[in-house]
Image (tube, rainbow, N blue to C red; front, side, top):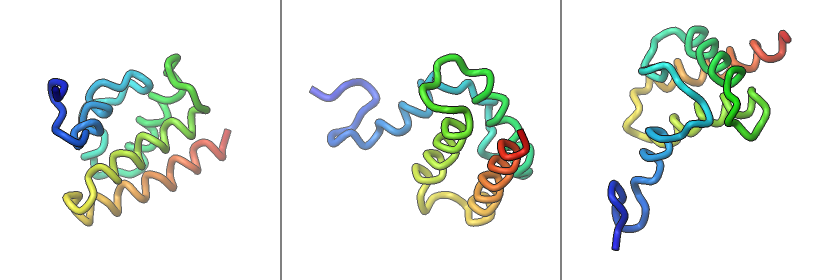
Length: 98
């Protein structure tokens, strides 16, 4: 029997992770914003404030960002992918400056 919200083969597990993960409390729509620095600052705030994460804050924030990019795959608009890739660099800079 297939669990609610899942397809055979588990193809919906990533959507469930994004929806129900409590490791980071993300601001709504954070991955759709057009400012890479704003995205990075929001992810940093979420990672730093989280008490549920199991990894260091940078790793948790970066993992969530990369997870979103990979999950979106070819459906991600090229311009938004560029913005999210820039957000990765901004996130590294934010943590390097500590």
